[in-house]
Length: 80
Image 1: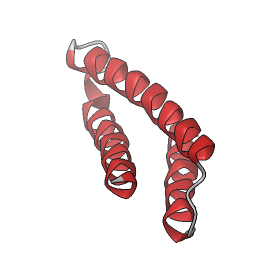
Image 2 (image 1 turned 180 degrees about the vertical axis):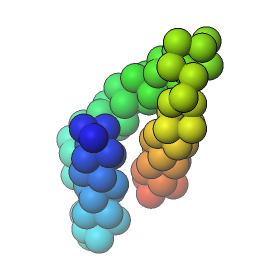
Image 3 (image 1 turned 180 degrees about the horizontal axis):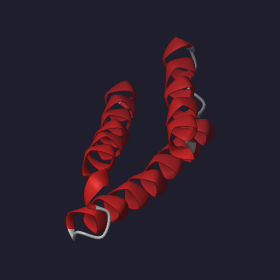
């Protein structure tokens, strides 16, 4: 489950940023870029499952997409 491992790593990185007093902008930008890429992949996979090719994987695709969106939202809240 490569995608779960990557999402867990991204979630851990967000937690580390939360706990820092100074926020490193390069690390945040890298994390944003990785989340954007992950969002593209998850949306494409969701679209493929909804088109009927992998009908049995719709729930997995929705959970994956939701997790990515939640992580992006958490990062955006952290930056404000």
